[in-house]
Amino acid sequence: MGVDVSVADLRKVYTSPPPMGAGASAAFFGGKAAGGKQKFQIVALNGVSLEIQGGEIFGLLGPNGAGKSTTIGILTTRVRPTSGSARIGAYDVWREQVEAKRLIGVVQQRPNLDFSLTGREILSFHGAYYGLTSAERSRRAAELLEKFKLTDRADDLARNYSGGMMQRLAIARAMMHDPQVLFLDEPSTGLDPQTRLLLWEIIREYNRSGKTILITTHNMEEADALCQRLAIIDHGHVIALGTPRELKASIPGGFLLRLRVSTGSPELIERLQQLPGVTEVNAKGNEIDIYADRGGQLIPAVVGAVSESAAELHDVHISEPSLENLFLHHTGRSLRQ
Amino acid sequence: MNWTTFLAMLARDAHVARRNLAALMTQTMLQPLLFTFVFGRIMISSGLMQSNYKGMLVPGIMGMSMVMTGIQAVSMPLIAEFQFTKEIEDRLLAPMRIEWLAVEKILAGMIQALVAGGVVMIAAWLVLGSGVGLTVRQPALFAAVVVLVALFSASGGLTLGCSVGQTQIGLMFSLVLAPMIFFGCVYYPWSALSHFPVIQTLVLVNPLVYASEGLRGTLAPQYQHMSLAVVVLALAVMDAVLIAAGLNRFNKKAVS
Image (cartoon, rainbow over all chains, first blue to last red):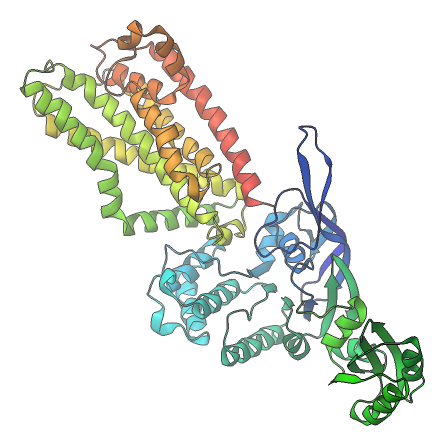
């Protein structure tokens, strides 16, 4: 059985600008500090609790700055939590750092390779840090280079690699010591679609050997295709948690119709609410979101309701049940905003 | 303590140093040897300097080379590795307390400083030819001074490397390193500053003063030099302060 990962009531307040990639949602400048200077404060995590079971692929989904990277940073000893606890298996990440670090492999959002070394040396020295023997290191390095299609360039300095190659090498490096828990922070950034599929397959294969995988993404497709369970986070809070299927089923109605009309009168909203299959209508000025159990079939009725209210329909967009809609439903914002 | 990881990191630094050996050697040796040639040969053979200046110069040059090499060997890679590329991350994630990575950096810097000191001393001796007049009468004391100087250079490099950003490297050279060399009693003994009492007092905060005077006192005791007890004590205190400051800065820089 794989190694569990959990965080409980995790809070992180940055008092200096956070590291690149570590998200920052709600920035505010608090009261004056003793020196009369404005105190810099960013609340990145505001009470996040998660239980990730051993052997599952768990996704953290959210827009930039939601707190995904900070969560990963705390779980991988790189960020000190302001309060709350984080555990990898039996170990408290902050108090038993070395034991926790032995169990994990980490792929950061930006390739952070050791640029003084070649691709093969990066893997080999990484293995050496974890106490692998020389023979094991050469064998595993050769295997991983082959798997990630880097064998041809293995003996070139990593600083001369392309962005995609660096990313592949960073993932290979994280797997080099065969960690029980693999953290991937936006792993498919910078990868072409083909390589992304290769990566997904490698992640699934790694998971089949009983390893726990925690992945962050703002890509719905990736979360849907890869993750067994997902937490959607925004502004440092978990706003939804479940399997992709459960989460999608929790969207009222499932389908989302976004309308743009000339005038979004209360009368029109009422008419729309009474249409068959409609579960919820949210209006913001001239933009109206209709959650319903059907998509295209609803259009004639919508058009009828709009013209009866003496308004004009400018635009209709239908989207099928998706995590994107779920995020929109919970936050009123698109993931890409 | 996880020695396997520690030694692997030391091996990594050795590997990188070997790869850059030619550049490192040039960086270490060129400037000190040019100084040695100009002051020790040209100035002396033209009669502008007395010939006994040779023995005065070599310990100073050796101290300066050790200090510059140690500081640069530790600070420059750290400055680069802590930048947005975060190259150091894989070592911070290795199964070892991160303070030991800083210790490893200090040890690697000390080794480089010691090698630089030895190489430059021998090369300077060769450049100067006969009549240098160096003798080691107290090998244990000499070794202690050399180790304390190496430790100062590497821990100073750690502190600087974790305090200076990539854009401030030029400033670090002109604001910290250049005054340190010129007021470091490299080319003259501390007693030569007696006509400038304010400067003579101010330079006492400069660790290179104790490095130069200590090496002079153990390699060429025939010249005026500071009391070696003062030198050893001052270097030990400065080493301790720089190690503490360096580890503190490193921890702050490594964990957000």
